[in-house]
Amino acid sequence: MKIKTAWEIVLERTESIKSDKASIEQFEAKQNGKKIANEFLDYAVKKNEKSKTIIEEALKQTPEEQRQAFKLGVFETLVLRLNLPASKDDMKTFEAVGNGLQCIINDARFDTMFQQSKGIVSRYLDDVDQYEQAIKQQYAPRLRQKEAELSKRMGQQVKIDPFQDPEFAAFYKQNMDALKKKYQPFIDQIRLDTETAFNKQ
Image (cartoon, rainbow, N blue to C red):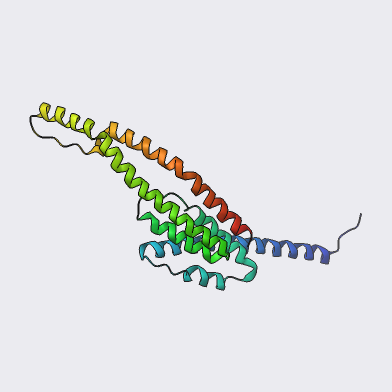
């Protein structure tokens, strides 16, 4: 068995320290990517600013060997925000996510795909409005009946907010969940296509 010299032992330790230092730097670059992505979203949504410079400038300042880790941090943060919006206001977030992802995915096909996905999400929001109107119309006779019964009991005119009525709330949720279920596969596909485009970088 060969006995290691003191010099060989020092060299091994140095390599180990270098390797640990590189791992720490990669981890920190990824964490910075997440932080920058959140700052970008915050700025884009609150100030309605579409500028990509926050991510682009941070990427330029990141050492080349850490850029992929930085991009991964940005990607992981933004891809989680690819969801069906709850309201038209959330469309700003969806668009901002696309703008942010374009900074780290340099692929014209991804840009085209994301423009198409915005159309699908916009259609979903239109459907939400239509569903809501249809649900209210369908439930209106039942609501009027409940209002009449309560007014008679209370001796004065009573108006019920449909969303305060448990029966309506359950009926509304059931129908909206069915609509979400119809559109969720599109979102799943958008996420998958985004991941594929990112992995090709």
